[in-house]
Image (cartoon, rainbow, N blue to C red; front, side):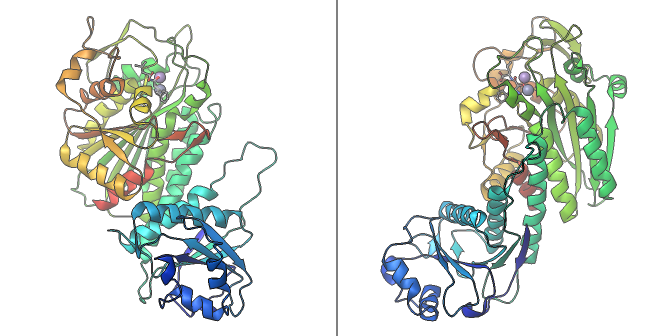
Length: 495
Ligand code: BES
Ligand code: MN
Ligand code: ZN
């Protein structure tokens, strides 16, 4: 999709396949007030008010009414969209309005549309927010993933979206640029997540990263194979890959356009390209969804692409721990003890708790970058889905300031996270009778004890962990959501 910001001009002169106009405020004032509606009504010689008066636009945020071929106008269609009874829209209302608009635009045969957002005011949110939400709503509904259908679904007709953001002459180009870069990043993240496990292997992810580095000179990528990881002592990560025919990879991204002396933020992604559970085999039902177990990795890819498009001044490192988790004669068994790169020994009581096993070595590796912050992103526990469902990612942190920044970025970008506790009391659940630590914490607080495990490997820096098991994909739609690319990107831009 192409997006443009355009200046306000006379309503009748706006040359577009479809002019989208929000209708807001108390119904009895639509006509009396000197609003856009009134102007439109006089241009169209009463058509607009007649339609509104006969109730053709339901008074529910996001409902739309299409008026084709309006008289007296250059626009070929008018799309009225209900935007609430108040002059200033609440954020939820605005989101519903944008979603309704986007869905209607998707079904239309219009190739270019113009959104007249000039007199939209959103509660406590700047025009930048409106632009970002508009782009993301349209991207969300127009996203298609049909590479694997021999007959592709009907393409979306819409090509160009013009936004009239204000009556002022200065257009918020920076906000649009940021939003478009994010859209590209989210799309990559969704695409990678949606790929089947037989295509999206650790080697595939590594090749994809290398390809990105070729295309974007600001990115350097280093890929480590199993023997290099072995030399580094990554016994925990490698124990997960032991049962797979697909060798593991550690993929390291570096983007350094910040001050030389500025310590980098590090994003660590869980990249289990298929999680069968290993010897602790998962039940069959919905096991297919474990192709999404690399959505943490996909998030790292997505954030990097967004950053590469935008080119902000910052130092960013990404570490993707990519592996399959499979049962085999050579697979790791319950009761096995492995030594992690940190030197800590781990008793593997359940081979299905593999995410933490790959992440702990990636976290230890992160130390060498002298990071400002380390944030790992992982589809880590079913327990997190039980606790928070799909609406929020679980957030854990050993630093309150970092946690608050992430929560705020999530609120702003409509990609919410909810903080969970990391109290010491939980730590004893993962004490092992045999080794330094056990990889499962027994009954209760499964998402918390998984985070507690990671925390033991994140003592040397300010760290946060996001459990995205519930937010990264939709089980009903069997589709990746691209989350939490929006949250992390916003966090990075906020600085
Ligand atoms: N990838 C799963 C977590 C998961 C499960 C995400 C279901 C989304 C839906 C992870 O590797 C896993 O299997 N975790 C186990 C941990 C348990 C063995 C302590 C789980 O959550 O059951
Ligand atoms: Mn697992
Ligand atoms: Zn997993």
